[in-house]
Length: 136
Ligand code: 5GP
Ligand code: ZN
Image 1: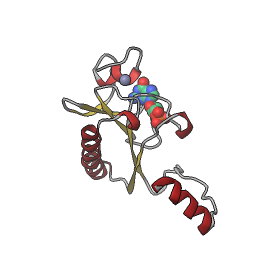
Image 2: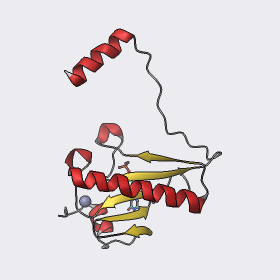
Image 3: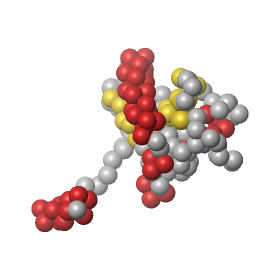
């Protein structure tokens, strides 16, 4: 299940070379070409899914299990101080490559990166309204 002109389909299936950290039947884990930190990697399913909205439940479960294994292994090898898992869905959320991928980002005490957001100041009423939209 590939999509023409998808760079991650080509990488995940070996048509374009990459620095591969792990591979099995369903996934490839590669180093990101524009890393946030030393060791920044991407989990790619070999099948094409645009993003999380598209991902089968079973694959989603396997992705998280693989992420956990990679995080533990890479933390041990890289001796990093922490780890971010980042996963962007849609242009508004910063997705630039429309083939599902999960970022594995090792963090170092002095790495100078900021992955964050500016917290909104919402009232209890506003929070309650959002809650009722989501669960209603
Ligand atoms: P997104 O913004 O879609 O969540 O992340 C896309 C990521 O893919 C970026 O971190 C970018 O550096 C990485 N990337 C884009 N093209 C390539 C490529 O050809 N090879 C590799 N290894 N990473 C890529
Ligand atoms: Zn693809």
